[in-house]
Length: 429
Image (cartoon, rainbow, N blue to C red; front, side, top):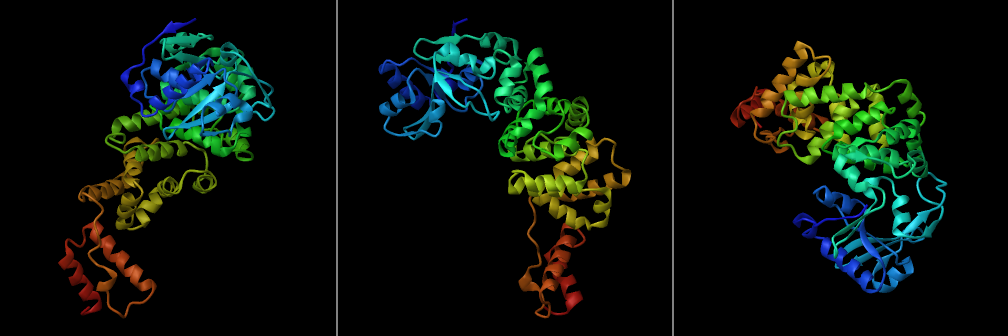
């Protein structure tokens, strides 16, 4: 069923829209059928920000290359040409039918075809829409507009076949659920449940990209709870996958409940940067794994978390009542500044289930109170140049650390006190 729509200012003022429209118009002038396609159409109909613009056309790859002087043919065998125009890359795909998917990710061969057949080979109805910006017409061959209106994620055609073709679609369905807050149509959901373990055939890097998008999405707890219900985080491949299935996460419902309660009781999401939100959400997710701290650290080392996120998460999962009490207060104050650990400590204090002990709560409150007394991480009052020359090697680092911890803990109140204590310990320096 076809309809008409007018893009809003967010769509037409997108920095890449002019380049996409220029490619569209040049293909049209050359007598090719061409439309905006896929996610950009879905997002403008939902009045969401568009990430990028893709075009679908009757032009064969060679025809696109002849029209535009600067192109990339990385996906040419699949009918995909990247046109570089005005410094912007626009993906142009020839209308196609897909052959068999031998590797569970990409078709072995493609057959160039019509818009109707192109729509029929796509993953979900909401991603199978075409738009002509000149006429304002939406071309909908799979009832995608209806599913958008009803907030439904539905596979195009037979869900089991769609997921057998490309195993990553199993995870993409849950990613769209997390991004859009839509429900998943029943037959599509049944197919996901039946075939979810097939996701392990996909590279861990590609899977991790999808997981990062879920973690960063507005309805992230819903997306992750669906993953938990279907068997766990899919980037834990064999033998981890077997371990994961035998030692499940808490149920998806319990995950959503515990996260919601934690976030309600604290200001963990208030005024935080995007990177901090990602860090905290990964921490909340990893604490639901039935794995030892050592196993979780191994996971962090083996998968592409990125150096800063990995460092922060390793610091966070090292927090136990034993380590909080045994290590100096200054140690934890410094770590809290370096790795956003205060977010985790706040969550342990107000949202952990079962609740933390009174002793652990008091220790965390001490750390957070001291942190709040500083606007930013303070510079040490005692520097290496202030130490006596008799100190060598590791003694220098140990002494500097000791005095900095005393400064953070408030035992030393100012620079004069720091030098007074230094003089008391080492004489005139």
